[in-house]
Length: 81
Image 1 (cartoon, rainbow, N blue to C red):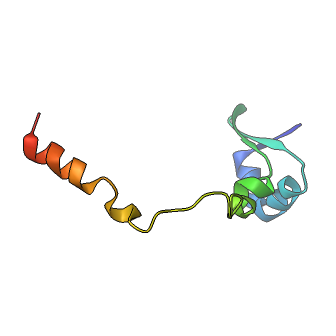
Image 2: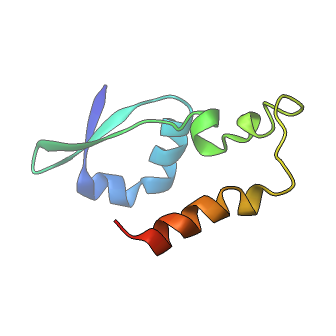
């Protein structure tokens, strides 16, 4: 894995981003001290849209969901501790 100094990383940022996206992981160092590891994001980390709707048809939400338990909650607040 190659190490790049921060000045070079700033100068060649576009190229380095393309390389990282292609899977070429590298480290950016400052004064020879490793600071960050640059790795490509996975498709799940970027969007996560494949999880949307994964339980469609498996559960149902009651019509009164937004007021479910309202009487019990009101009673707890009015009663106090």
